[in-house]
Image (cartoon, rainbow, N blue to C red; front, side, top):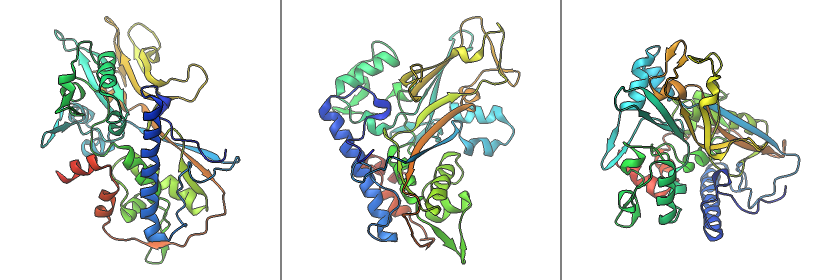
Length: 367
């Protein structure tokens, strides 16, 4: 495989010209380098087991590891335990006002928006996205307007999406009226890269090697232990790091919608409930390629009813519970890494904040 020529846009999307693609690759490469440098400040220069594949060769005998978790926020599910009705309402109806920024508490790298019949309130369509905000800030203004008109609603103007000539990711069509890309402050590509890098550090506490995923994330402080995604990503990466692998993220670097499990679902018409699911942006796997979905819809036709656990779909969260979000890593050169274990460094929140994209850093500081 040798060195990767460049990082491609998520899902190999064709929204950018060649110059922009090069700039995107440089941006992702820089995020890798920043995270690697921070890890090296603890483990030593040249000893980080997370590597930048555009600068370091990946041997031909590498292995891939896909990590999957469900799209519904585990923090909310755990809060309400078995009361799913309250959990669905909080995930969908709560709008977090953080200064001028508005977002929903959907923090598993997948966010959604529900469309209902104006007269009856019947759920018609749920749109899911896992596209990072950073990508959208890298696009031409005209392309942004074009995509909003294509995927959200025809007739959306530039003035509705921009403030003082700068793209506003918290515009009404990406928060209250629709969903084009991720807005939750934890759902960033920078966070993904940060977790992957920091999780390669081997940990020890009171003389005992730390292996438990929840203990690792608390020790290394690379995410939120209450989520489904962060502890799982970090824990699996650390498993490979302890087995002396070198590790990176598969190109194109992003989180992806992988699949919807409709096993056990029912429809009034007898139609396969999976029929109403479609990946509409990214790779859907229909041509034999890897599924790299960044936008998907579940759309219920007029007159149809879909039942999950014998209950009709009334909330987008009912569908989100069965959606797999994924991250794919590459592991290689087993046995070539031989790092020592490190004590928990204490509160590294300030360090982690320094590694966030500048725009995300500003948002974090408003908390």
